[in-house]
Image 1 (cartoon, rainbow, N blue to C red):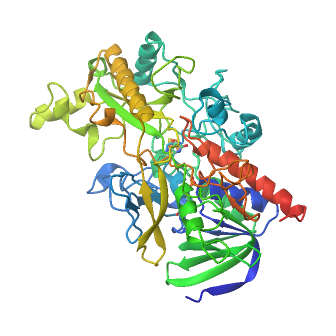
Image 2 (image 1 turned 90 degrees about the vertical axis):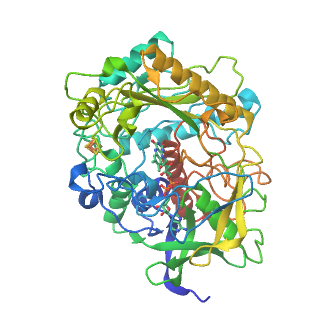
Image 3 (image 1 turned 180 degrees about the vertical axis):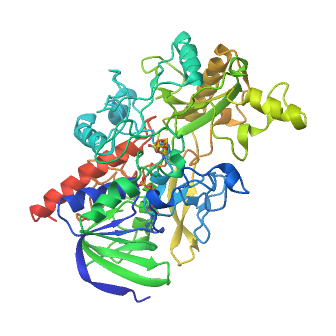
Length: 564
Ligand SMILES: Cc1cc2nc3c(=O)[nH]c(=O)nc-3n(C[C@H](O)[C@H](O)[C@H](O)COP(=O)(O)OP(=O)(O)OC[C@H]3O[C@@H](n4cnc5c(N)ncnc54)[C@H](O)[C@@H]3O)c2cc1C
Ligand code: SF4
C-alpha cells in the first residue's frame, strides 16, 4: 500500500504518549528538538474531561463499567482488556491478558500513582541470587534522574533509610486514616515494615500545580492537576514550547529504514480516515508500551532485517514479565458502627509495606510489597461486594439499609505485588494468521509461571490472612490451594508488563544498549517498559520515567554532537 509521505523531516518521532513517550516529548522539546508524537488514541484534557466531582447517582449506571472503561464509567482511562478491532492471541496452554490504553497520556490517566524507585539490589539481582540477568546499569546511574523526576512531577513519602527502598525528594505524606492505623498496629506486632506510601500526588503546590484537596478520585483524572498524568504534566508543557506536533488517532504500523539500515521514520494509519501515512525523522523513539513496541519492531521487516528491526539477537519479544499478584480481603468487626468522621484522602493508600524479608532464607527468590485498601470510599455500583458476605448481613428494606450503614468501612484488603523471574516460556511473537482492523499482524503470547512465583503467592496469602487475623477480622475467601495456584493472578492482569526489548552490554543477548539505543540501529530508541532486564517488586512507572529522561538527555546530547 502506498503511504502518504510528509515532506517535512522532524528531529525526533516518538510513538506513544504515555509515561515513557510523554517524558521523551517533554525533555526533547525542552532541549530544542522539533518533535512529532504519534498517539493511537484520541485527545484528553483532565481540566475539561475529568469526572472528578460527579456523584454516582448522577448516572443510571452508578459508575458501573463500560466496554471502553472497564474500571467504571467515570474512570479517566479509555482502553481495556479487549479493544474492538485490535485483538491479540495466546498460544495453546497459555493464559495472558493485555490491558491497553488508547488516548493521549496512555495508562497514566488511571494508574494508581504508586511511585517507587528500584533499589540498588534490583539492578543486580543475578549477582545476588544467580537468577535472570543483571542490568548493564546500576542504581547510581539512574538515581540523578529519579531525583529530577521527583522534583519535576512531585511524589510524597518519608525518609526511611531502607537498603533497597531508596528515599526520594519527597513532599510530606498524608496522615494515615483510621483503617490504616489499625493495619499499622497489626503490622508492627507481626514485625512487618509498614511506612507511609509513595505516590505522585502533590501534598504541596509544585511547579504551578495545585495541591491535592483529598477528594479521593484520582482514577477519574484530577481537575486541579494535583496528581501525575503524562497528558497534563508532560505533554501539555511540551506542546506549550511550540516544538511538539501531536498527532492523535495515529496507529503506528512499522519503523521504516534506509538501505544503510538506519531508521528513516514511522509508517502509521490515520484512524479517522484509514489512510496510510508516513512521517520522516532523524531519530525514532518507541514508547508504545513494552509489548506494543516489541510488536512494532517485529513488524518492521525488510530485506536488511528479515526477522524484524533491532532483532539480530532474536530477543525482541523475549524476557517479558509481569508483577506477581494476589489479594485477600476481610471483615474487621472493630471497624463496624464507626463514628462518622472525616475520612478524606488521596485516591490511593496512605501506607504500604515494602519487602521486609530481604535477608531471610525462604522457599522462593526475591520478594513482594503489600498494598493496603479499605475504608469509606464513595459508594457506587458493586459497593462492598454485597452485604451477604458480612456475618450476619442482609435482609430487606430498613434492615438492609441499616446493615449497609453498620458495615460500611469495615472491610480491609491487602494486595501483594511481587517480582517474577524472566523465563524462556514467557514471550510474545507475531501471530502468523491474525491481523488487526488495519491489517497489522498482532501479537501471540506464551506464558508459564514457575514454582518461584507460585510459592511467592502462597507466602502472600498466608501473610495477608495473618494480618487480618491480627486485626481481629475474618477473611472473605478460603486459602487457595496448590491446584488453584495459591491465588496467583493470570499473567498480565497486574498491568505491569515489562521487557521484550531488554537492554544489555552483549548485542547477542539483548536488543538495546545501556542508553536504550538499539544495538543494530543507532538512531532507534525505546523508552517504555521494554528495556527492563528484571521486574523488581516495585511498580515500574517511576523507573520508566527516569530511564526515559536519561535516554532523552542522551539523544539531545548526541544530536548536538552530530552523532545522530
Ligand atoms: C489500573 C492501573 C493501575 C496502575 N497502577 C500503577 C501504579 O500504581 N504504579 C505504577 O508504577 N504503574 C501502575 N500502572 C502501570 C502504568 O500505567 C504503566 O507502567 C505506564 O503507564 C507505562 O507507560 P508506557 O509509556 O510504557 O505505556 P502507556 O502508558 O500504556 O502508553 C502507551 C501509549 O502508546 C499508545 N500506543 C500504543 N500502540 C501504539 C501504536 N501502534 N501507535 C501509536 N501509539 C500507540 C497508546 O495509545 C498509549 O497512549 C497501572 C496501570 C493500570 C492500568
Ligand atoms: S485526591 Fe487529590 S490528586 Fe486525586 S483527584 Fe482528588 S484532588 Fe486530585
